[in-house]
Image 1 (cartoon, helix red, strand yellow):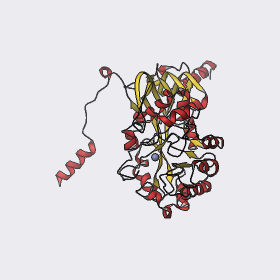
Image 2 (cartoon, helix red, strand yellow; image 1 turned 180 degrees about the vertical axis):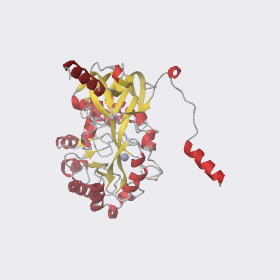
Image 3 (spheres, protein in one colour; image 1 turned 45 degrees about the vertical axis):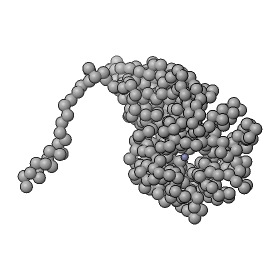
Image 4 (spheres, rainbow, N blue to C red; image 1 turned 135 degrees about the vertical axis):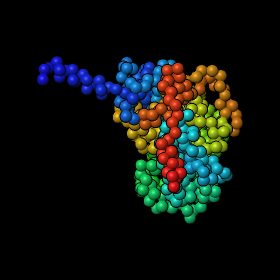
Length: 425
Ligand SMILES: [Zn+2]
């Protein structure tokens, strides 16, 4: 074969390789894992990230999203939600869980982690009816109580069975990321001890909603003695468990816990984020490791609203944007020990969030109903899950309607055949 022909064939192969399904062009990429905080293009092929670089050719892409003036980050991960919907579970009253796809993509979220709505008894039902049917990636902390967040279920010692929890966690290692305790109202350590027992047996972390304190059940003992490095203290700005001392100082046990490697999660919810706790804590330099919503019908219709709203609160309290993004991407992925998530690494599944940073006059409401004024707000524009556009606020991936190849709707063939065969009999 002539050398020039070999070169030509080589170029042909190269061109075929650089064809993208989707190119997100000209956005400001924030990818904390890879230290990127600059203008880049992001190319996607077959559901995966294939290139993050400057000046990628638009002609090589089937679809181009113009992201100039917008930010681009790995898909957001919310590590505390309640999505075991249609069951009446979560929490003490009524049906508070929501279906994942109804709330994830429109808020920039591609991965949701259910925080113990289901326990080891009902997890298979949760998986079958919600997790397997969702386009959102749904993972779960398994409640240490078998029935999960059923009324009074979380205060039933007889149902807190580490062996049951371990058995189910081992059955679904791709879905279960740890164990959850919540709303416990006894003055002992039964909930924590049993969850940690399950955590030790599986090597998985425990997420703690510390419930009620009393007797020797104190935050000092929890953070200095009970929890292990990598365990997660959610609702860190609630103030319900002496996170802030009456003097207005942050409880030194919070710093001690951080030094020991315990992770602190926002878990905003309907009763766990207050300005009079968050402001002094952040002034003292105590930032959260992860930002999460504690999404359920009560929190989403009150001050919490959604993940970008909670992220915006931290932003307006002075946490830099790149750190806010880290808290819902790479830090969140590490907290749930899924290092294949939370970055734009080449080869990883293409979960991407494209968002705007709005400047203006905004109001943010805490769990008590108090407002803080702010000047910045995050607005998700395009959400991509496994390479597919699953949310597109302004039709950035769409074609102008005047150039759109409309087709007349056709009756499905299967339906017609069925009708005629019945008629012939
Ligand atoms: Zn919760």
